[in-house]
Structures are given as C-alpha cells and as structure tokens.
Amino acid sequence: MYSKELTSKKRDEFEDILEERRLSSDLRYAMKCYTPVIYKGLSPCKPNAIKSAVLQSEQVQYVIKQLAKEMGESPDIIQEEATEILDEMGHRMQLGAVRFFAFTLSKIFKQLFQRVCVNEEGMQRLQHAIQEHPVVLLPSHRSYVDFLMLSYLLYTYDLALPVIAAGIDFLGMKIVGELLRRAGAFFMRRSFGGNRLYWAVFAEYVKTMLRSGYAPIEFFLEGTRSRTAKTLTPKFGLLSIVMEPFFKREVFDTYLVPISISYERILEESLYAYELLGVPKPKESTSGLLKARRILSDNFGTIHIYVGQPVSLRTLASGRINRCPYNLVPRHLPQKPSEDIQEFVSDVAYKMELLQIENMVLSPWVLVAAVLLQNLPAMEFELLIEKTLWLKGLTQTFGGFIEWPDNLCAKKAVLSGLTLHSNIASLVDGHVVLNDKGMEDGAVGELVFRHALAVLMCATYRNQLLNVFVRPALVAVALQMAPSFRKEEVYSCFSFLRDVFSDEFIFFPGISLKLIFRYLSKEMKEAFTEKQFIPAVRNFVFQLLEKGSTQCYEALSSDMQKNALSALVQLGAVKKKKMPNGLIYNVNQEAVSKILDMFDARIPVQKPVAARL
Image (cartoon, rainbow, N blue to C red; front, side, top):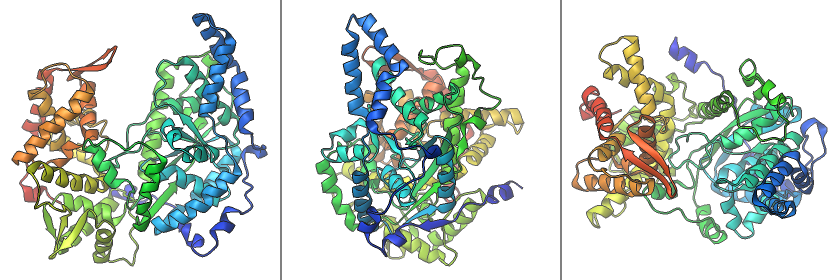
C-alpha cells in the first residue's frame, strides 16, 4: 500500500527547449516580438517610478523621521541616504539588455548542455498564475546558472521576466554587474545588521514590486548555492517580506511557485569540493568569468527544470492565520510578526523546499555514484550495473523521480554516466575506480586531500538520492536503537535522530558526524568560535585519515562540520553565546558523551559486505 501510493504520482512530460534553438537563428530568437501578458493587463512599471514610490511611501518616510529624531539629523540627510541605498539596490530592466542575454545565453547553453528539458504544463500553469495574482518564483539553488536559466526560460515562453534578488557581490563584476541589473537583478547586502533604514528601504522596495504585480519576484529560499547538492535549511527574511502585503490585505492573494532545477553535471562541482575542504571561494569578478570560458569545451549533459504547481498563500493561511490584528495598527508602522506568523512563515518555507525536492530529477549517474561510494576503492563493472539496476527499482518504489529512457539498457546508462563524469571515475581493467590522478606521488597529506576531493565530488551526486530514503532510513535506525518496539520508544529515538540531523536534512546517521562529535568530546575543552572550530576539526579528521584510523573523507566537509555544531546547539550539548566580537561556543562534555554513547551502544556495526549496496 505504501509503495503504491508513492509510485502513483503522475508527473508532467518534458520538452527540450534547445532543440529549436539548434535549428534556427539565435539573432532572430533574441530580436523576436516580445510582448508578455502580465498581471491583470497592467502596463509595465518603469524602474524610476518604483524608486519614487518607495521613497515616498509612508513606511520609509516614517523610519526616516524616526531616525532623524533619534540621531538629531535633518530628515533630508536621511532621505539622501535612502536614495543612495535604492540606487545601489534597484534594478533597471531594459529590453536591450534582455535581448543581449537571450542571444549570448543561447550560444553558451547550446555549447555547454546537450538538452535543457522543461515541463510545458508547468509553464502553462505559470502563465495563468502571472495574470491572476502577484507571483513569487522559488527555485532550488545548485549553480550560478539557475537564475540565468530561469530568465532565459521565461523569455523563451513569452512570459514576464522576473526581478531577481542577487547578492551584492555581483556588483563587483565590472560590466557584468550592470548588465545583470539591466536584465532584472536587484542587489541586496549579505547582512543588514541593525541598519533600520536599509531594512525599511529594502522591504518596501520588494513589497512595492510585488503589489504592482508587473513582474514575478524571484529569490532562493536556501539563500546561497548548496555546495553538497543537499537542500539547505531555508532563510525566512525575504519570504516574510513577500507575505506581508497579503497579511495586511494589500493584495487578495500571492502565488508561490516552487521550481526544481536538476543538473546531470554541475558546472561548479570541483570548485565546491575545494571550498568544502577549506580552499577559499574565488571572489566574483569579470576576469574570473573570462578565465572560466574554458569550460565551454566541456560537456555538462542535461538540465531538467520542473515548474511546480503554483501554491496559493490565501489557501495556506485559510483557517490558520488571523489577519485582524494587522487592521488594528496603521500599515506604515513597523510590526514585529507574532509567533503564529513566524511559525507559519517557517512552515511554508519548509513546504516549498519539500516540493522542490519532490520534483528533482535523478539521473542514472546519481544511482551509480551512490553504489560506487559504498564499494570503494574499486568495484567490478558488471556488479556495478547489477547494483545500479537494483537501486533504480528501490528508488522508484519510494517515489524517486528518475529520468531513465525506456530504450536505454543499464550498461549503456552506466557507461554514459562514466563518460560524462570522466573527471570523477573511470573504467580500468573491468573495474570502476575514483580518479585520484597522481595518487602514487606526493606526501601522505597530499594523497588524503586528492582522495577527499574525488570522494566529495562523487558525494555531490549521491546526496541527491538521500532525499528519497532519509525518512525510512531514520525509522530503520530508530528501530535498532529503541530498547523495544513500543511505538513511544521508537518515536523517541526517531525524534532524537531527526534533531541530530536537522541541518543535514537529508543525511541519515553514519560515522561522519560521530567523528565530529568525538572531536568535541575529547579535544575541545575551552570556549571557541566557528572560525576556530572548522579548521581544528578538519585537522583532527585529517590526522585520522593519514593514520588510516578512518576512511570517512566526507567528515572533512565544512558544511557537515557546521551542521554538526548546529545540531549539538539545538540538543543543548553545546551552548552558544553572543559576544561583542561574535558568537562563542562552550561544550557540555557530558551531554556530547551521552549522544556518542547512544550511537555506539545501540547501532550495531554491520560487516562491511552486508552494509554495502
């Protein structure tokens, strides 16, 4: 019954939008007649008109007067500062820049990708939604390509282009930053701190664009690109802002549209692995972009874009949110959201991410990577094919969305994946091995680093599969940990595991987090900051790998280390305290030891062969 429900969901069919682009002129495509139908037939709103409306709004004027009074400054000076913030932030969408991107991206995408597949039914639903109510696009975030691809897609289907929340870092890219601004990007600082004026101007700018409804608003719930291909816990700030006009009855409804973007091969895969191992992220720059043009000679396979069913905010709030308190306070006065509203925003954010995950497309390589990582250092090719087919069936039983053509045999599917990902794994003498080029040379530390790099790149694809199995896996482990099969005891263990892995979200229990817990239990006696913790725990794991005491290379990942620390804070095993120079952490050694004991005492260690896929 359970598996029947899981596999019965019907999903839309995909169409390759690059097929037509390969057959016709890119210049004609870029210069086509572009007249998108927009919200209730409104005329497009000029960027300068939006800025003027924001500056003159009651909300911004109220904050300006308050700050002028508190600081003893002239309101004109604060007004000038607000104008500068808007000039830095605001988009200046122009059709000329849009056409330039349409032409350029056509050339680039045809070079990089074999196919870009889109569910056309989803695009039709989006077209209707844009005409009815303000729309918020919520795509998953795995690559810088995400926001470029979505704008390209909407232009292709003659839909209104979105205005996109982008990090202020992009403004540092000469020419490119300005082109992005003219293609619809508006820029936000990574942190507002206690800057009330910036927050007021930014919030009003977003709400003004939403209320006018002339263009969809697009932002990433995850806040940043996921370096591990696991869905990151959502950020609530922007979502809270776009919901506010509905709470205050300024719009009748708002549609939230979850969008899943799945990559057969991620452009930044090696860059992410280096970052997770502590190599600093390169700063966004035009020169860096030009240097990256060498990837144009590479093949990155297929992208699948699944535009989900628009979700009505009005329907979500019905029977749950009482909007009457908003009527008791003038709209322009800042209001701290009630606990009910905060909980609602959080629930909606997680719901949107779960919908993104549900429609992520899994390629055959994802299955191959999962099997291969369970059978390192090498695996017989024929056995790999057999286990991949077995895992395919299991994934489909649990509702996984696998894109596997009916006429493609397992051997060809595995070989195709190995060809596309030849930088990660190779077929050598009938065995599939990870690529550790030059592993025979160098010091032990260098060998560990190279192998960790290969493992983390492979894990990026395996991680996409964990979403399918995380809940049944936690239940299975809880059944092993519980003293008996009584429902209350099993659920108690399940809740404990869910809390431990709440930031990993889709990662089920294993030795990686135990190594980090062990470090905190044995090594960390003094108060510490996150900046001290990450390199220290990485060094601890590195030494264990050099000695051969563990083979868990994924424990070197900075994302996993941060998530382990966050989980221990939630469980009360680590205390977090805010200080003038940042956050300080203190370890409760007894509590961490108890958590380790729960894992060590209850989870039986399987024989290696039995534990493998």
